[in-house]
Image 1 (cartoon, rainbow, N blue to C red):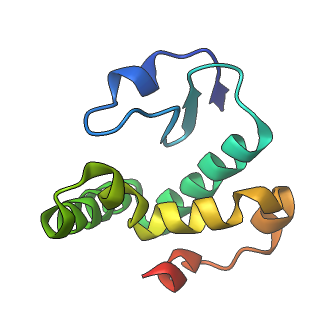
Image 2: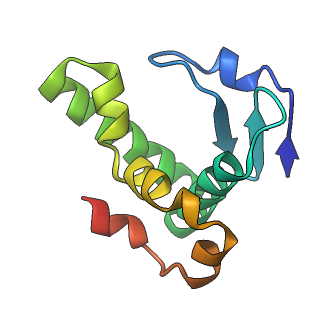
Image 3: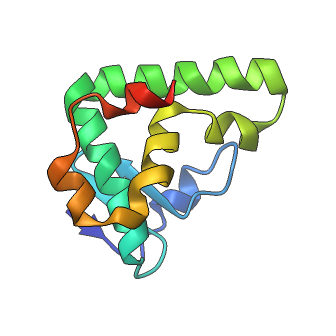
Length: 110
């Protein structure tokens, strides 16, 4: 379910400013959003289902903390998270990517 014109990304922007946030099963977007953003967030929905919701968030936080400890830069830490790497790399492929995506595809971005 996509919730547009939401303040949730703003309220959850602790370390970097977020435009959209996925909290299974919802996608919250600051404005109307575009197709690439929606695909990006749908990739995160798939990742969350694969790992169990809590498992995804624990790994996400763990990856971010690991990279933040290495770089001391919250933006670099964010972009080094394998879940984000997959989503950014594949968001432009659209629904086609979601249809052919393999389970645990994010492992290719470790």
